[in-house]
Image (cartoon, rainbow, N blue to C red; front, side, top):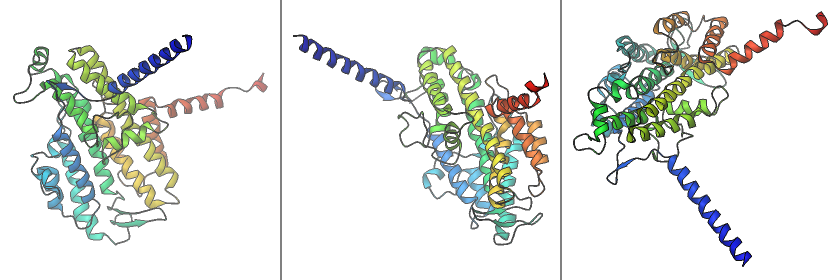
Length: 395
């Protein structure tokens, strides 16, 4: 009898464990329904991310033309995938245009200038040895890169700049901001459960989903547990995975995913305080991705510039693009970690890669570490304090 009771208890415990696991699993899914159908939609975001990937490939090919690349960027047509041409979407219209910030037309123009520089100056000198003032090819034992007259690898500068001015900006300064979630009657509609015409979601739900789509829109299964993203694509998802697995901001990908799920659930529950708390987490953590990659790539340049100049220029170009992205960060209170003026000053000093000084790169690393509160800055301060502290022999 005792054995039978023990057996039943064990079975009950096992069932409870399975049920708990199932609940935990369900909570780790960005899956929401209305009337038995999914209420999540962000096809436009996926299309634009796929466009960014094809643009990236085009910016690596000497068969590209300036007209083709500008057509893809500005018009959203001319892609190998006909579905992208037919989507009616484009990237340029979403650059530096978050509703919580003033539209920055200069950012779009600079991205267009990147395209023109690549097509008009780098491609014609594809096999010419590069030097200060001469675009061309640069090689070492690790990689070969094609650079402009200033030593910039244009594809990396373009794509990393796009990560901040496009994907990050659309998430943290647009779709999870009150100007997209609440304004124009969206809050009242959500309170009433009023869905968009012909759709199964409210405008507030859709705005949050669009933010989600700019980060996870290329994932194979968007209802899976994306606490650790796959790193798919060439934009923010890829670098969230890198930073989360590194030592500057470890584990933030889980915080970001949990916040997206919690925020969407809060919208369904009409709990706007919880929604805004989730939005704040997303803003801070995704902004850290930009800062962490600035530090990572400038450190790589310092470490490799003497022995592997091509690999170093590759890293420096990525770092430059992430610095370009800094004004689109959001500290959770609506402010960037670095203003446009601050970033313009940094990039002016970095303008010619051939003559950039290590001390200037290190100064940027220190400033970013301090501004974002990364551990590297704290550790440096602790080491400095230890060095300056009097020894016990001094009495």
